[in-house]
Image 1 (tube, rainbow, N blue to C red):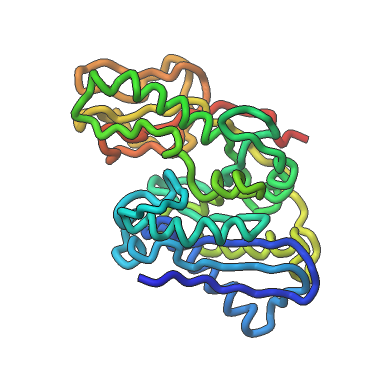
Image 2: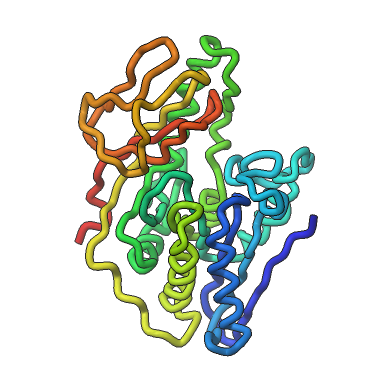
Length: 318
């Protein structure tokens, strides 16, 4: 399959933005939002006045053609160029990663499985640590406040790395689990973009089949273009109130009989000590702190992320 990107370049210097849709093939709201913006740019209803913007309506064409999350594997894990591509997503990475590195800001548009409301994933605060050193937090935070959503989440890569360490301990106990023990498996589009010195946000626009999700994606693209001064439009005001949460625990499913006692939705609150799930041996998993559950996946394969836990954060306050 071939890959497609559409670029618009102004004669005036300015930021370089890239917008991705359908990194996962069954998450089409970003594709629809991008198509709407492309039509408006081509019709002259939107006009680039500075900088460059590149759109990738369908980042993973194999997964998109089959209307499924992945082609051969999850593109948004272990995203890096390789001299020895084995899976289709390796070919995508060899094309996509250099394209990302040509830009300064990434907006990656996604959706999720369980019902819920849109939210934005940010990177870490500025730091010089070993997991995800970063210096663009202020730029990400300013943009996150202008995407039109009322919730922001951070803490992805550090939480994932801790989960990998825990998998290493469990690998011998659960040999039937398809455990991925490489910390780099947590690196997706935004993490790769930050590694090149850029800023990046993932916008989760709503549930996969939510009729409003494409409009959420469209609004976010236009707001980003305005905020970065790529189009002649006022800077959108920051949202009046935004809830900020930090991921701090990931729990893997270890057996096909591991089960949830209820149909959890992302951001359902959980109290300290509340039962969240039951292992196949009858043991109960309880919340170690008060917070909320994120990305519960009752269909997770053994050895893969089953759910995350997040706690409130003071980031973005005031």
